[in-house]
Amino acid sequence: MKVNIKHIIKRDGRIVEFDLNRIRNAIKKAMISTKRYDKKTLDKVLNYIVKIINDKYGEEGTPTVEEIQDIVEFALVKFDLYEVAKAYIIYRKEREKIRREKMLLLNKDKLDEVDKAFSLNAIRLLSARYLLKDEEGRVVESTKQMFQRVAMTIIIPDILYDPRIYHRDGGLEIHPYEEFNFEEYDGRLGFTYENGDRMTWNRYHLERMKYLYDELNRKGMMKYSWSEFIKMLEEGQFSDYATKAYQYYDLMVSKKFIPNSPTLFNAGTRLGQLSACFVLDIDDDLDSIMNAAKDAALIFKSGGGVGINYSKLRPEGDIVFSTSGVASGPVSFMKIIDTVTDVIKQGGKRRGANMGILEVWHPDIQKFITAKEKEGILENFNISVLVNNKFMEAVDKDDKYPLINPRNGE
Image 1: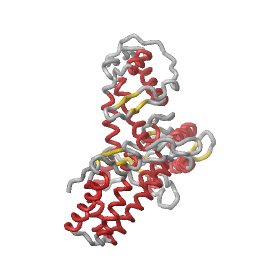
Image 2: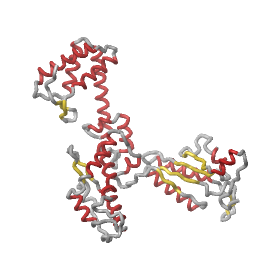
Image 3: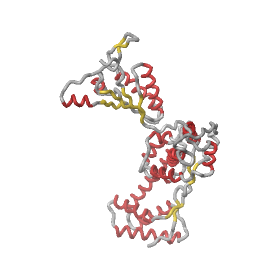
Image 4: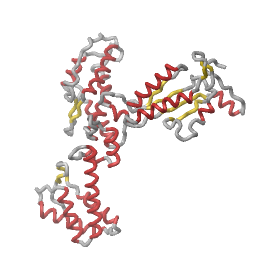
């Protein structure tokens, strides 16, 4: 039988096209789960459901999702499919339970299409780590808004490198620096896509945009002043970038591509830090080591991780002239960064991570290799040995290989 109604009212109030196949698939799953699947019976039940819908709503009526589900339950009982009806009701209640928990996690009354596209576990993770919160820890953006926030960040460099305003060879007159009220333009500039969705830049987007503009302007690469550029944005001269923004947005929402965690954390926020991995250099002195610890703490706070080559540090037991003492070696200083990681992860969005490197010629290489053998030591580190051709040749020849003190080359 042909169903007459054209639309259905979703729980969030949206009116969408009615799809009979959704009912068929739901009943089929309930039948299979109770080992009562039979195609002829399924078709009979479905025809009966269509008859009730047509009689009750005609061609002009628009039922709600709940009303259709009630009809399905009634039809299953009508055909003595009590176990199937029970499975269908349980499934319906479970879905309702999931919806309610999602709404609670997201601090909202209705779920949108993006909220529904992600599993409950994904929403739990997003609300705990990725979605923006207020000072009291309440979620203040939806999953959809998070992806929009990221997409609007990603296209900023594309626009600023557009030939309409950017000259790749430089040599242009440097425009005078201009102050800008970011709060005044918060949410004013952006794009409206063909489906009616609007995506805008917030004050932090605009801060990053101006920072990049000023950098390129200092190099003589910008054809227009900052105020002229803003006017071009207001006039919609770069509205063609709406397509790029929504292409990137769609990639994320469809789960074909998700950027790294710092991008989800920080795009369009005060930090604006999108990188996941940083290399820190450490010299053989205490100031350098402690500065690296401070830098690592700031990186962990922003959601990034660090990699450090400790090979410049003198080996354990080597002399320290300034104190007439002896050095404690690279592994001991790795423990400082490891402790910093533990402390920062308590207040950060996720646990920090480190990659510790020691080159194969370092006298402490064996201590380094075995440093993680005991439980609880350097738990925030992966450790890697940096090898060279000379070492591999010595391995092939079963030959000796010299260890070298980085302090004096001996």
